[in-house]
Image (cartoon, rainbow, N blue to C red; front, top):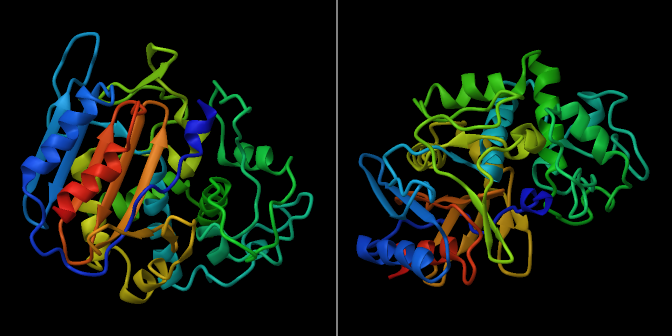
Length: 355
């Protein structure tokens, strides 16, 4: 379960408008195959062209009852949360309240201390771009806390481990970075980071079904999809989850509709000013598979040459992709269990944009 929290980007951004997106039937087929061939209980996709939302799904939202999906189905967004947090930080940058190239020690004096960690050498930009060298607060052998935890506690967990590398030396996707980003925002604004993201990003865009769960809220608001894990052939409902353990790096709850509207608005320049959007889209290589990462936004070129921007999210029971090209339609996809074979999120992106 802990390992699922570490899932990061699977596919992300585009530079060119989409010319002739795939027929909807191609996307529907991917969702059906995810259920029939990959053993996923349910799969949901939403397409948004800036004016109209279209919804697609296969399977069921609840295995126990056989209930079907409905519009505006709540899911755990996982690391898609990072894009919301980054957008809020970049708004503060635009206001002159945060300097991307200032050391984190400026905003969190005396707070970030540990073996090999130099807060005077780590910049806010490096934190948002996963180049800080800060250690991960979870690993594959760490139990996920069952009681509510704060960002401060998550940072304390990370600081028991040594730095992974010198700041700026390389890029390693690490959830701790966005815990630190949240704490910086709180230090600057004097308000809880969840409230700041809600006030600055969620409310202005009218994302009525997107929210940060309260620390002791382990469930989801109705209507919601159930999330599952399948271990050794035994399927378990893992919908209820201590989301506070994911912190600002992954605890957001949203819908496919809201996420599609958000990424579309972000890339259209309606969330952060042009200079700050350019900062978000200034990427470095993340891995050998062609993924690149900016400030909360990732990018990847699909097989047809279309570049998509966005983020993926993996958290127990839910695996989500939120992407769009600049000037093209947004796509969100969620599957409610790890697929047994293949990658339906990547397949959906390829089917929609490249066929």
